[in-house]
Length: 438
Image 1 (spheres, helix red, strand yellow):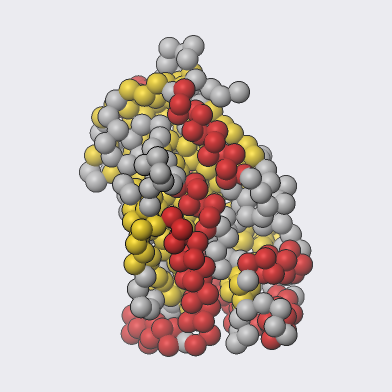
Image 2: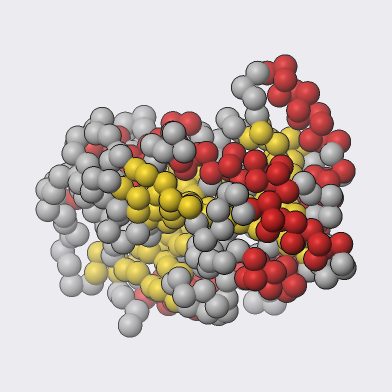
């Protein structure tokens, strides 16, 4: 059943940190009928801009190979029945749905689109609140329930880490197996991921506190919280706004040292590494091939740059194109583009079908939503979809979290170095959850 929703967008002014508005009360509390901090939280933030959503006005879950198409069809149906009040001249104004998708076509993990009841937004210095209510509601409201973690400053519960189906000690042997398959000619590249489990020793984890930890340390990433998936991704699968499409591709990684002089030398070595450049070229080629049918022009840099993050450096390429209109004049929606791009060689491998088979054979556990699209879409089909990296999926009761990290394997890969790379990529979520001694 398609919900009949009314979306109302009004100008607003909020604290410097959008997350502070959850606790701060004021205009936000007036809109929500009290302190809304215990409502389901949805977050999309980068460099202080983006969205914080609370509550759920509508949700849609889907499975299988047609999950992107069915989600987009549902959202179009919601918009076709919706009443939209207020301005809509900036990206993200008006109706918004936030989504997280399963990596594999046969995954038992449902993909989801969520329409929050309230969205606080900031873009280019402007701020607004959008409310979504059902046709028979006068206004959405929440009871003044306290956050499960208490006031600001509360600590996360103590956590312990348990190994995943493939332990750190076993990982080099798994990488060796992948290298042997590549050298035998069965595939050219495969991206393998390992997981660990974090368990709370004292009650549920508050995702707001996890998000705060990520936002404070990884300001240049896309920090997200959607349906229990929490993370800070450095990789934008696709951004579609005003007829332009952008994709940031990351492949090829080295750990930062914290010393500027040493990191400059390591960045130069990364930019010259034949192994990492080969891995990166596969990823760029897969994105370009997927986007070309949807674009009039596509600008691809001659070579990658080096992206510096607090704990890692990546080879990075940003591809930009002008979207091609259909015969009816319509532009392809962001979910259509995400579906065409997923999974890229940056998270799967080359050739895609054989790499996916090897992933299923060697990883020993379904990825769920790890390394799949996570992001948002608006009423016009524009949106942003990052790749869900540096992330964890919280359990429904909030008392455990599954963390993932992976790396691209090519013929020249070193198994011990690949293990070290996964450890470095697990660090952001370990820190955000308080697993500093892992």
